Amino acid sequence: MQYKTDGLAFESLSSDPISQFTAWFKDAQAHPSIEEPGAMTLTTTTLGPPPRPSSRIVLLKQVDDGGFVFFSNYTSRKGREMDANPFAALTFYWHDLHRSVRVCGKVERITKDESQRYYDGRPLGSRIGAHASPQSQVLASREVLERAVRDVEDKYDAKGAAGLDGPEAEKAVGDRQVPVPDFWGGYRLVPDEVEFWMGRQNRLHDRFRYTRSIESEQDARSDKWSIDRLAP
Image 1: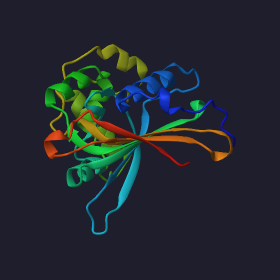
Image 2 (image 1 turned 120 degrees about the horizontal axis):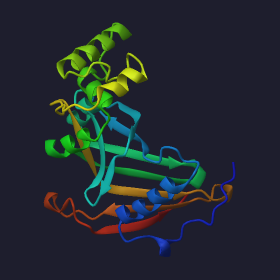
Image 3 (image 1 turned 90 degrees about the vertical axis):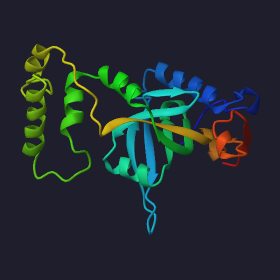
């Protein structure tokens, strides 16, 4: 496959990677063929021995000066791995723009209040599902999961909210106040390295890597970045 783009010039780059990412992300959101621009590969690694990486697709829910925010069950495999080793990586790939972004950094949990605000904006059925699902654990059958869902629906007087009885039953429920589970919430990946890739003909791609300048642990959120062009 040949990538036909005008390329990425050093002179066009923002001075910090969050601003550069935000500009590219807006382009992806506006592109008619990109249905899920926030889809990203999250890679985590256990401490071992030996260390074993694992990857999955999650959704970006917020990007700000602090980093990249996503949500998960804390007891899931990725949650357990981030507890054991908080360093992780994200990869975005927008094929129709011939662009990719790679992010490396340290993951931290956001506050419970922040998680609750996001959680309150989710569909009721999704909130019920977050309570009911023991994410990443082995299930004996689909029936076990559905029984757990119905138990949570009964607890919050929300029978039918998760759609197990069809869309009409789901619509009839209305909304309910459901607290965010203690085992569920948001993570922020605070980047220390961000790479922007743009495809060009004959694999002579443009790659630029931002690296955060860190003199001490206290300077981990410094906004000083160096930018290097990498060979394709």
